[in-house]
Amino acid sequence: MNLQLPEYSLQVMSPEIFLFVWALLVITFDLITKRKSGTAVGYMTMLGLALTGAFLFQAGYGRGFGMMFFNDPMAIFFKVIFLGAAFMAVGSTFGITEKRIVNHRGEFYGLILMSTVGMMFLASSQELLSLYIGLELTTIPLYVLVSFFKDDKKSVESGIKYLIVGALSSALLIYGISFLYGLSGTTEINQMTINIAITHIQNETLGVALLMPIMLLLAGIGFKLALPPFHQWAPDVYEGAPTPIAAFLSVGSKAAGIVAFSKIMVMGLEVFHSPVMAPNDWGMMVALMAAGAMVWGNIAAIRQTNIKRMLAFSSIAQAGYIMVGMLAMNEYGQSSVGFYMFVYMFANMGAFAIVTIVEDQTGSCEISTFSGLSKSSPFFSAAMAIFMLSLAGIPPLAGFFAKYYVFAAAIAHAGQNNTTGWLYWLVGIGLLTTVFALYYYANIIKVSYFGKEASPFKLKAPLPAVIIIVIGLLGVFGFGLYPEPIIDFASNLSDYFKR
Amino acid sequence: MVQYLTLAAILFSIGLFGVITRRNTIGILMSLELMFNAANINLVTFNKFIAPETLTGQMFAIFVVVVAAAEATVGLAIVLLVYRNWRGISTDNFSILKW
Image 1 (tube, one colour):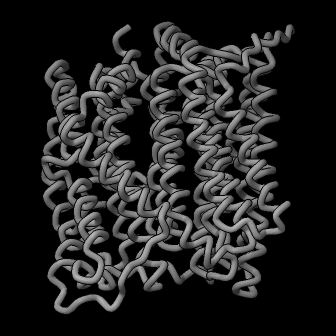
Image 2: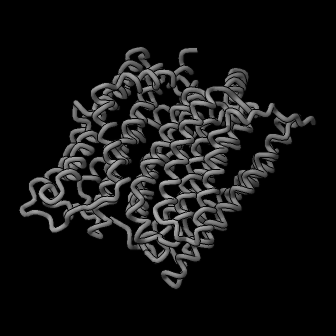
Image 3: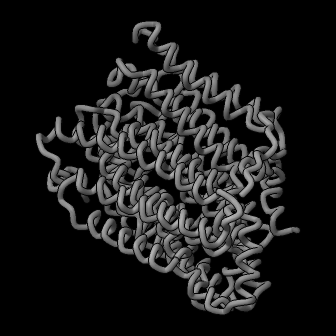
């Protein structure tokens, strides 16, 4: 029994270390100013996230700690998404921190940063242990953040629901991972793939033995991604959580789930995707989950009266579209998923930023509060309309190209392999449900523009929130009209399939 | 090896059953601990019988223990909040958020 320490390189890990230290600094800063730091602590958090972004490109590609930490293009790309989501979430919190969490600003921002650190570790992991730890580092701070309004029964209720569902999903995931370790004898994902393939050739019964870990993993990651039938927690949690945290959950946490899915299922168990591996063909199971997400997410969103619940169902549906791209096991699949997630970040964070402002000033998240808002606050209702159109996928906006690339990748894959003809069905369901989606997205526009009289509320937003909305608009328009730079960046994500 | 795996499977099933049926929030957290420990037994068993030349599985089990402890800490803190708000920790209380 020999224990050897892998090589030690802090260089590639420097952004994470920096962000973690910054999180501690944020908490300390709030304490030494005796909880009177005001908005300074929020600006400090945003500065830390921006600096980490700069560090990210300085650290570059490479690996450290054996396979535990591996900066490939995919890791860098998703780290940019995590940092962007955290930046935009923090930017839209200023209204809340001024009013509702005056005494715990430091912890609030510090926990957002720590959750981001967890996501970044997750994106860099090439190994089941660090992947699991990254996932837990992501979710544990989020349990606290969701239940941050201690006296608000809604927030506490959503916190306990998120905690139970999140812990259950991680228990399922770790039980599944333990079986993967048992079947392969290693936790490195690349080595695991090889070992499982070898054992599969030698021993046919492995086919059935692998069914249980695959289902456990799909359940565990399905909970994180809120894919049906594991989606019921999402609307409750989004409704009760502080709105910027709901936004962070819907983008950051979802992107983390997508990275985990991509690492374990796509890279680790790719060979078991094809229907030839009949009992444990996970492609078909994920296809059913994605179809369920697109159909149920879009239909249930129509009847919601609370905008946060509506956005929750919309994010369930978006996860379904993302899974369509994920199932395309070719050089376009992962790139289209990355592009989708990147664009989704701008539109969704922008929409949630506006919901935060509305909730802050009117005290309500009902869709009816948007009535007549176009006359009293034209900028915010116009921005909301644009974000809704991008989420629905209307052509000049970036959301359209995101959906287009995802479906194109799926069709390309179905064209190459005649065993995956069901992908055509999946794309068909996707296109059909996009039409349903247009109904409830357009409903927001209808309410705010064609409401009878002017709204009694004239929205005033703190400066950072306006900046976040402008960034969102720039992203939605900019990457709609000129998507090349981000597509070039995203096209590296599929390096795995070019080998 | 089969005995250990069976033990883990039984623990996991008891835990899952507890999470689904318990009405007491602390009971649910205890059942979750059972599920994590089932995974630990699996990891250590596989380390011993499949890959005895490395320590990966045992290391993994220690990390899972740490994670489960952290989760239980946060969980109990949230249960405390629940108790303050409702004066009770039964899951029957949670009926504000529904559609």
